[in-house]
Length: 92
Image (cartoon, rainbow, N blue to C red; front, top):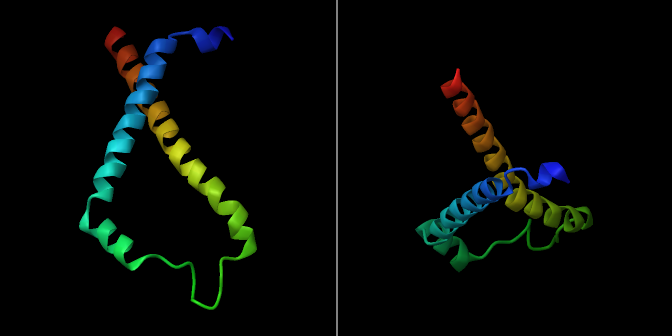
């Protein structure tokens, strides 16, 4: 519990900042012609006669969560490691 309270404001700020940047990038992607074309045509999973395999119905929601939570998490960790490395390099 002591580690969770250690510099919690700066750590929370970094995670929120990266999440906001990723959200802005996703919003800008939504406004592209490519996304408009996909929205007009729609998207089908596989051919018309076949549906989604039953195993994928359980796996795909977890992949979505992993991407939407994991990418900002990994970017935050990478940024914090780089900042820590730069701070240590300045002191030395």
